[in-house]
Image (cartoon, rainbow, N blue to C red):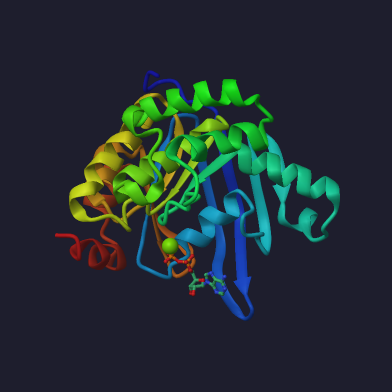
Amino acid sequence: MKDSEVAPVILEARGITKSFGGHEALRGVDLAAHRGDVVAVIGPSGSGKSTFLRCLNFLEKPSGGQVILDGEIFAAADFSGRSHQHRGRLIKLRRRVGMVFQSFNLWPHRTALGNVMEGLTQVLNMPASEAKERAQELLNKVGLASHAGHYPAQLSGGQQQRVAIARTLATEPEVLLFDEPTSALDPELVGEVLSVIQALAREGRTMLVVTHEIGFARDVATKVVFMADGAVQERGSPEDVLRQSQSPTLRAFLSRFR
Ligand code: ADP
Ligand code: MG
């Protein structure tokens, strides 16, 4: 896409709040991701990054505000009950906004292939033979073609996370959310997972990545968002946020990575 063209907004958060008991974890977060954006979300522990990501696909129900996915409004106020209709809408939302977790969350008793097939057979009701073929393609994509028959315990953390990414891709989400995808990994395994995420970015996928990998944010992100204390403190291009910002909170946070 040329600089002069602006891709449409695919995912938007408006005034997202979230309280746990009396604690306000999110104090009104706004964010707009355009198609193809890679938004790096940085910030200290406890600033609300995970809660925000989880609110975007209603894994955590926001206390207030709206999530707008490709024009479809999901307002916190509309999801107070437990109606069947709500559940159906949320299942669809979570399929369209896929999540990759820090801790992989693979089924231990299923092979890599089985883990990737699951969403295809269970969520999309794809016949097993077709699902198997598709899952194998996805494992190829994350560089694990030859590990299809391995169980999670037989894979390194980096390989497990790549299987988890393939599993999330299986249902073809329009937006991918990554919550510290490399934080549970030994340092030597971080690169292989970041490479896969970078390759997805090159395909033009829209992604939000909570990360402490500042180099990744600088090199791959189109936007950087700095959260502190349940709110967005700074936002802009990687250059603006990571280099030019004069915010003392942000400078203090970034100084820990040098
Ligand atoms: P981050 O991901 O930036 O480290 P979190 O979103 O995990 O931050 O947490 C933000 C705040 O919300 C923290 O104070 C945390 O203790 C609190 N919090 C998160 N999840 C829950 C929960 N399920 N119950 C109670 N408090 C929570
Ligand atoms: Mg977190």
